[in-house]
Image (cartoon, rainbow, N blue to C red):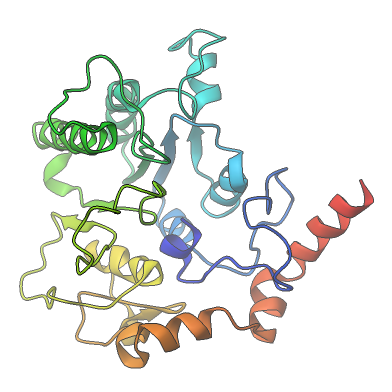
Length: 293
């Protein structure tokens, strides 16, 4: 999520601090040197909302999005406070996606009805982790739970987009669908053709872009930052932001220039610039505090 919105990887300077613990306790500075999508849109007076069925404080998500764009956070705790779910309700990561899509319609309508433009960012979670989340209502079309969950999630996302298409805000709204990583299900691909190349699914809707080189591209989450802004018709000098390249431009991404293996190797190296100007020592502060405790 950080890479997709800032064009920079989230990596502890000394390689010791687990990134899921960085910002877990909402430190005053989460990746303080980054200038993200949220901050760009905040400068343009966008109302911004982060909507999820899990607990936003996990992995420092609440800290990051509040500090980089002043997002309104509506998560599992918010749903409890609004009495949308019982106080003792807890399923999967908090509450399941079937409820998430229903609740999201009201919040999306609310933010779209404001006079200012909006950024509504929503996380689904039913396909996240081993076997996914299934209920008695999940259709059994494939004979295994994870396939059924993936198909059911696809259907829910399609239904949600179809609903958006009927709303007055849709005509002027760009929709970006993006996965955060490959599946965490360890054995799901054991019987799949070994030549099948697993990738993360991405699609842009309502961009107004026509001639785009969208076949067999090599790119990473870093490139989603400038590409998302470009999809909103933002003009980006040089077609680059952070380490990302606008995929709607004619520029090659870093991965295309270097090849996957060289790119991956470079991303793991320590950078004094990164430590000094992006992290600004914030990861050391958290590690030091944890050690003291």
